[in-house]
Length: 227
Image 1: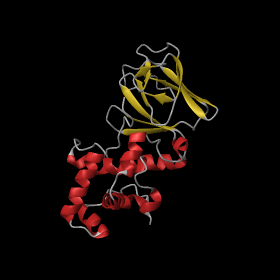
Image 2: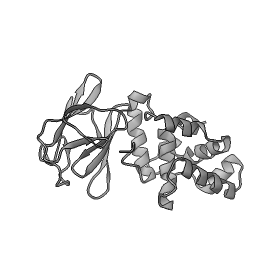
Image 3: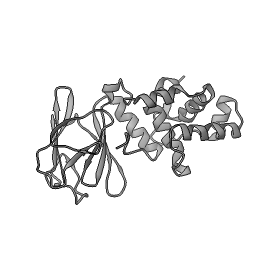
């Protein structure tokens, strides 16, 4: 299963994730049956978290009929979190597409699945406050041209304020900042959409997704946004 299984779809969702990442503690990201993004901080409330359909579960998936009432358990061992499924669940628990038998150590970026619900496990401190980068992600970020990098920074500039209602910069705003024509900005954005492999997304979701990936993969840093 690919990394980043629960992409942010709006600027507001992106801000929620950035805020959670800045706290440095592990957390889960998933969606309820209405598509609403949920973030569950694992550091709150002890070293064990039950996962299940029961409303009494620490991570309650009451909306998912494929999840058992008592499905699995997340446990902190030292500084790391593990997923344990000792056969209590009917349909099993999966990490990156592999069924868990017993206990599995979790790593930043893992995709967890319980029933029909897929979660992203984040542990920002493992990567120094940025998502762990695969080698291909690093090469992709390093391969950006100087102009593409400037366009990315300008695109993400509104997020420097920390406003919940921030949205990626418009083509005109980017053009004014980097001294390009609007057509040149559009051409660079098209190239960036392809480089970050989001060319097939709906047009109204590409910009927020590009901003999320650029920040998460380290193509730009929060410090550059306030510069």
